Length: 443
Image 1 (cartoon, rainbow, N blue to C red):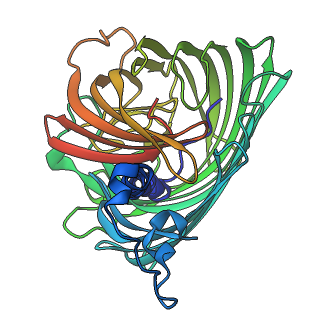
Image 2: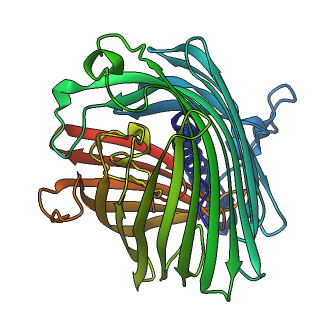
């Protein structure tokens, strides 16, 4: 059971988490070399004892792994938000099994579009069965947000599993290019999306493999003019588009879940398939419109060798009835999120293509390049070549496998089992390269 994706500005910690991993690896390598030298009698016999370090410059301050706070540079980029620079001091806390169970990561940053800003984050992993997170952010102009997420029953060993989210997000980076699979990049527009959302998913576990899940989502969205210089606002090019201004949404969704993965966060074998159907009411209260949805989301993991995992993802979503559905509730394609209704395509920015129905497919080889131990935990580094393809379409009778948008790329992942995955994915499509960062695997 996956929680909703964090707002785009909340994902910045993942690139920083990967930077922490690489920084600690460099320090660990240097300390390991020193330890090997000291343990070799032949070498140590030829080296005179080193003088004691002066009191005013303790040697421990040269060892980054002994610092209570790790200052990490922030370099964040994706096709919609552009480049953001800053610094992120990070606290890592581990349990007795040397597994990270809490990350505290505030930051100070600068965005050319929105000015100076700050984020505050806590990610907590009390056990493999439970996790929660709190994030908050503010920038000089336009953007701000807060998010709370909580999951219980992730290992499906008890009769019930629960996932809840409370989100407020005001984002200035969203894009709309028009409807359809051939929407032109030249028609790019920008808008400010201000949303407040509450969501709860309750799953009844028939056993460890099968689950029946009910999701209730209440959302208020206000689509305002864009503020990014050089890009017209959505109201200028698409003044009659459904969903501009204020809209309310209440979604009821029922899902049947088949899950044989060996781990919900870092799967190495098994599969997760979700068949779902839902109905939503939209408009200004009292409700005056509705739409329906149905789809399939499947993920498979095959261990090819001790260091290679073949991961595949397939998703298709249909909207049998749409009424006056707001554009932002339609099926979308683009970005690195693989939530229901939001299909990933890592050579394009989030929301690059909109229409009633969508399909996406991905294959990636997760190759473990090296591993190392740090004072906090054991870390694996993966290099992951991938291929994505997808499209949107407006009629259920259309061939969903024609006119696909192909993407090829490579990803880099830092993994601190059992709970932490940070990724950087670089994809290349027909409009050039796109870079994404995130926490947890894209699928």
